[in-house]
Image (cartoon, rainbow, N blue to C red; front, side, top):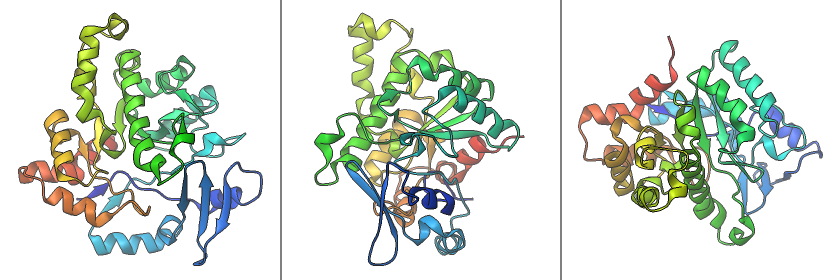
Length: 300
């Protein structure tokens, strides 16, 4: 079974709410009739695959992808005055209640959150009520990047999604570890978007910081790499060498196939081709393509 862990869908009710005029997101319509969502440093064209679930199913059949884990994409509901649907992350206490309801009553196993919430780090203690509930639930928390602090320097050349997104994911993961959040809530299963940003590449430097600076040892008693190896990493980086680096770091059992479909920068075909090109055993390839996600997401 092939499971695409990282992709995006816009419910029609969400798009209608954005176009109502009360959103912080500006919506225009392109020449093909697609809604275009504008926010600092980026915009998303909500193509048919973003909006039409029946059409999406035909695309998945064409690529022989069996399942997708659907999630909303940037900019996210936390930028609004009052959040609608998903976790209302501008209100951590309400988010904790909603996560509990979603998992206990609706049968979900976790949630996607963004790498910062209106500039606040996920490690900030205001979010600990949410992590306490997530820990009790053994929840999966998928961290997807959003507009980083300093986005003003990233408005040209698509630097915000190309550079800012991986940067913010890296910052979020490192902060969660160094702050002791990951250690305090050990039952949460953390999954990082876009192959963890630069985590597999920079983890040695984080370990050096742990040994060099007492501040980096204040909240944890193990090097960061030991915590970060327990994270999951989706494969939305289609460079085979980068994928291999992540496998060498965290193990094939912690890599999740991801496409970023149907964004302009996403690709089901590149997801499949990059995983096919890996120099790994067929059992490891099957794990990456779907078995890891199934083990993570399917509960008894």
